[in-house]
Image (cartoon, rainbow, N blue to C red):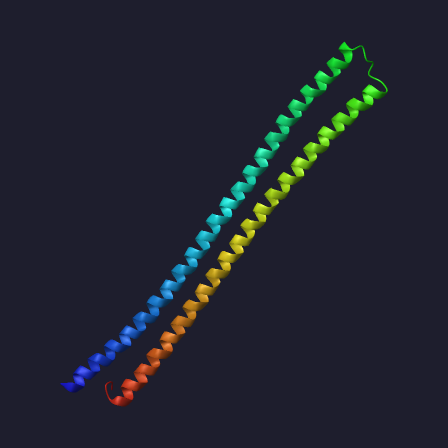
Length: 166
């Protein structure tokens, strides 16, 4: 009876070790998948923010140019009402005003593109970090499975030498 009990206990311990190793491995695999999903989600959020940034910048520049056309029209009307000819100094003032406005638009666009580019870089980095975490979790799962296998073999050898297993 003692031999049967020790055999049952030994087999139970071996099964427990195997199940524990398998569950640990499965848990790490799930952690890896979750890390990838979270990274992809966060990267998509950053990419969507970048797209939104670009859309808002384009719309803002479109509106600014419309306002600037209105300003230039009012400027021409005031010059005409004052009887000023469109040559020499008045023409230079109008050209300089137009040039400064377009320069402001270009500066605004460049700053917007910089913010957008930063968000795309953040998305890429987020994905890379997530995939690195996933890779580490998979590796840890493999180590856990290997460790469980070694523990199983060690326990089997111990039980075999104690006579609990035949």
